[in-house]
Amino acid sequence: MPTARRTRTLRATPDAVWRIVGDPNHLSRYWPKVERVEGADGAGFTKVFLTKNGRAVRADFAVVEADGAGRTRRWAQAIEDTPFERVLVSSEEVARVEPADGGAAQLTLETRQKLRGLGKLGGFLAKRGALKQLDEALDGLERLL
Image (cartoon, rainbow, N blue to C red; front, side, top):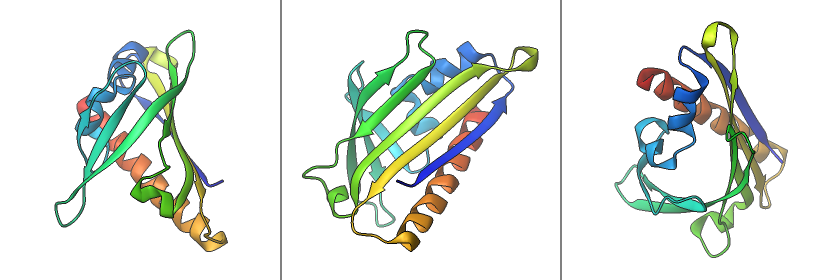
Protein backbone atom coordinates (compact mmCIF):
# COMPACT_ATOMS: atom_id res chain seq x y z
CA MET A 1 0.00 0.00 0.00
CA PRO A 2 1.71 3.24 -1.08
CA THR A 3 2.01 5.55 1.91
CA ALA A 4 3.11 9.15 1.55
CA ARG A 5 4.03 11.15 4.64
CA ARG A 6 5.28 14.67 5.19
CA THR A 7 6.09 16.39 8.49
CA ARG A 8 6.69 20.07 8.98
CA THR A 9 7.15 22.35 11.97
CA LEU A 10 4.79 25.31 11.75
CA ARG A 11 5.18 28.66 13.50
CA ALA A 12 1.87 28.45 15.29
CA THR A 13 0.60 26.79 18.44
CA PRO A 14 -0.67 23.21 18.20
CA ASP A 15 -4.16 24.49 19.08
CA ALA A 16 -4.11 27.03 16.22
CA VAL A 17 -2.96 24.38 13.75
CA TRP A 18 -5.55 21.88 14.97
CA ARG A 19 -8.39 24.40 14.64
CA ILE A 20 -7.68 24.43 10.89
CA VAL A 21 -6.52 20.85 10.25
CA GLY A 22 -9.10 19.22 12.50
CA ASP A 23 -12.02 21.00 10.81
CA PRO A 24 -12.72 19.74 7.26
CA ASN A 25 -14.53 23.00 6.45
CA HIS A 26 -11.08 24.60 6.06
CA LEU A 27 -9.80 22.14 3.44
CA SER A 28 -10.61 24.42 0.51
CA ARG A 29 -8.32 27.06 2.05
CA TYR A 30 -5.18 24.91 1.86
CA TRP A 31 -5.71 21.46 0.26
CA PRO A 32 -4.78 21.39 -3.45
CA LYS A 33 -7.66 21.36 -5.95
CA VAL A 34 -10.41 21.28 -3.29
CA GLU A 35 -13.03 23.76 -4.45
CA ARG A 36 -15.32 23.34 -1.45
CA VAL A 37 -16.37 20.99 1.35
CA GLU A 38 -19.97 19.88 1.86
CA GLY A 39 -21.83 18.19 4.69
CA ALA A 40 -19.00 18.36 7.22
CA ASP A 41 -19.96 17.02 10.63
CA GLY A 42 -18.28 14.86 13.26
CA ALA A 43 -18.79 11.72 11.17
CA GLY A 44 -17.57 12.80 7.73
CA PHE A 45 -17.61 15.25 4.83
CA THR A 46 -17.44 15.54 1.04
CA LYS A 47 -14.55 17.17 -0.83
CA VAL A 48 -15.54 18.71 -4.15
CA PHE A 49 -12.64 18.94 -6.60
CA LEU A 50 -12.59 20.69 -9.96
CA THR A 51 -10.92 18.91 -12.86
CA LYS A 52 -8.79 20.77 -15.40
CA ASN A 53 -11.84 21.12 -17.65
CA GLY A 54 -13.96 22.53 -14.80
CA ARG A 55 -16.01 19.41 -13.99
CA ALA A 56 -16.81 18.82 -10.30
CA VAL A 57 -15.75 15.49 -8.79
CA ARG A 58 -16.99 14.51 -5.33
CA ALA A 59 -15.10 12.40 -2.80
CA ASP A 60 -16.85 11.32 0.39
CA PHE A 61 -14.83 10.75 3.56
CA ALA A 62 -15.74 9.26 6.94
CA VAL A 63 -13.88 9.81 10.20
CA VAL A 64 -12.56 6.40 11.22
CA GLU A 65 -10.21 7.41 14.04
CA ALA A 66 -10.00 10.36 16.40
CA ASP A 67 -7.75 10.15 19.44
CA GLY A 68 -8.91 11.23 22.87
CA ALA A 69 -6.70 14.33 22.89
CA GLY A 70 -8.23 15.43 19.59
CA ARG A 71 -4.93 15.92 17.79
CA THR A 72 -4.99 12.93 15.41
CA ARG A 73 -7.65 12.13 12.84
CA ARG A 74 -7.89 9.49 10.15
CA TRP A 75 -10.40 9.79 7.34
CA ALA A 76 -11.29 6.99 4.92
CA GLN A 77 -12.58 7.76 1.45
CA ALA A 78 -15.70 5.97 0.21
CA ILE A 79 -14.53 4.11 -2.90
CA GLU A 80 -17.32 1.67 -3.82
CA ASP A 81 -19.63 2.86 -6.63
CA THR A 82 -17.53 5.98 -7.32
CA PRO A 83 -15.24 6.92 -10.22
CA PHE A 84 -12.29 6.25 -7.88
CA GLU A 85 -13.21 2.54 -7.78
CA ARG A 86 -11.42 1.95 -11.09
CA VAL A 87 -8.01 2.72 -9.58
CA LEU A 88 -8.37 2.48 -5.79
CA VAL A 89 -9.25 -0.28 -3.38
CA SER A 90 -8.92 2.05 -0.40
CA SER A 91 -7.69 5.54 0.44
CA GLU A 92 -7.10 7.18 3.81
CA GLU A 93 -5.75 10.50 5.01
CA VAL A 94 -4.21 11.12 8.43
CA ALA A 95 -3.42 14.40 10.22
CA ARG A 96 -1.42 14.51 13.44
CA VAL A 97 -0.47 17.66 15.37
CA GLU A 98 2.15 17.52 18.11
CA PRO A 99 3.89 20.19 20.18
CA ALA A 100 7.34 21.29 19.00
CA ASP A 101 10.07 23.43 20.56
CA GLY A 102 9.29 27.06 21.26
CA GLY A 103 5.51 26.62 21.35
CA ALA A 104 5.38 25.68 17.66
CA ALA A 105 3.48 22.75 16.19
CA GLN A 106 4.74 19.74 14.30
CA LEU A 107 2.20 18.62 11.72
CA THR A 108 2.31 15.25 9.97
CA LEU A 109 0.05 14.62 6.99
CA GLU A 110 -0.19 11.13 5.56
CA THR A 111 -1.99 9.51 2.63
CA ARG A 112 -2.41 5.72 2.41
CA GLN A 113 -3.74 4.27 -0.82
CA LYS A 114 -4.26 0.69 -1.92
CA LEU A 115 -4.27 0.63 -5.70
CA ARG A 116 -6.36 -1.64 -7.90
CA GLY A 117 -4.47 -3.60 -10.55
CA LEU A 118 -1.46 -1.32 -10.84
CA GLY A 119 2.05 -2.73 -10.56
CA LYS A 120 5.08 -1.37 -8.77
CA LEU A 121 5.40 1.53 -11.20
CA GLY A 122 1.81 2.54 -10.47
CA GLY A 123 2.55 2.53 -6.74
CA PHE A 124 5.66 4.64 -7.27
CA LEU A 125 3.77 7.18 -9.38
CA ALA A 126 0.86 7.33 -6.91
CA LYS A 127 3.26 7.92 -4.01
CA ARG A 128 5.12 10.63 -5.91
CA GLY A 129 1.84 12.42 -6.70
CA ALA A 130 0.67 12.09 -3.09
CA LEU A 131 3.94 13.54 -1.77
CA LYS A 132 3.54 16.53 -4.08
CA GLN A 133 -0.04 17.01 -2.87
CA LEU A 134 1.03 16.85 0.80
CA ASP A 135 3.81 19.39 0.19
CA GLU A 136 1.29 21.75 -1.45
CA ALA A 137 -1.12 21.30 1.47
CA LEU A 138 1.63 22.10 3.98
CA ASP A 139 2.63 25.15 1.94
CA GLY A 140 -1.01 26.30 1.99
CA LEU A 141 -1.22 25.84 5.74
CA GLU A 142 1.95 27.87 6.27
CA ARG A 143 0.40 30.71 4.27
CA LEU A 144 -2.77 30.55 6.40
CA LEU A 145 -0.90 30.56 9.68
